[in-house]
Length: 329
Picture 1 (cartoon, rainbow, N blue to C red):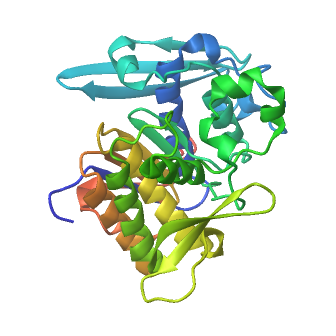
Picture 2 (picture 1 turned 180 degrees about the vertical axis):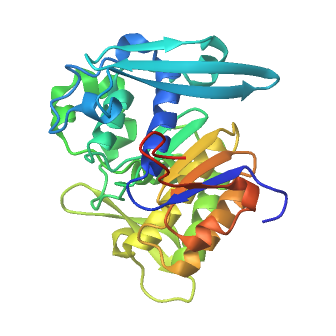
């Protein structure tokens, strides 16, 4: 691809650590954003897996994740030390990085979602300012939003136990609903700034991969709202959930990356972007990533030869089993 984009692609056989590299990168960002005081791996969630066993392996008592960051002209080394007893320590000057990453509401919801991702129980991406992580379990959940979901955030949910018990809807679908309601200027509490541009960007992706545009909403007897896709070739509209899993995957991933990083570029981690996609779209996905937000840094783990070959050789990494003393290089 031209202009030598910041896309780093990792490939390997199964079991050599591609996903572990992305999980370690995600943990560095979340550790910087939230601080070590919220990062104990004991007592956080009742999970069917032992999180400590995922972090500390091979019979050791401690694991270390080291990251080298550059913000503007400043370079910083950050380390996360994870003990088998579940305690976590962060070393390094994180203050400047934290200013780019700290969310508005510093509760433990995002950390819990990351833990759920490790356990294979979270289908939503992890999203912070300047950082997105799409795990390999991601999936656009079927179902339609309710109007009240427009205003759900973690502060509201934490104060209302009934909302905590309600199934959470796809981040992507909630964003569509906010965009369309904001564009219509129906709610005074919704920001209408740049909604037209955002809806145009969404529909450019829907048109490219589904041959239509999202223009109408339809109410349902259960008080939910259905998104309708109007084919560009004419004919009756149909529900967004009627798209294939591959269509929903590529549209939602590209849109969320553009939406959250086009004004403030950051680092985007994608595990197995080829999931649900036909080979023709493997190469197209990487090209679209660079065209949509060329200033991001993308780190991708893949089994796709097309995705691996879409970047220059100096942006490719192959993880290989080497020896018992140095098992992965």
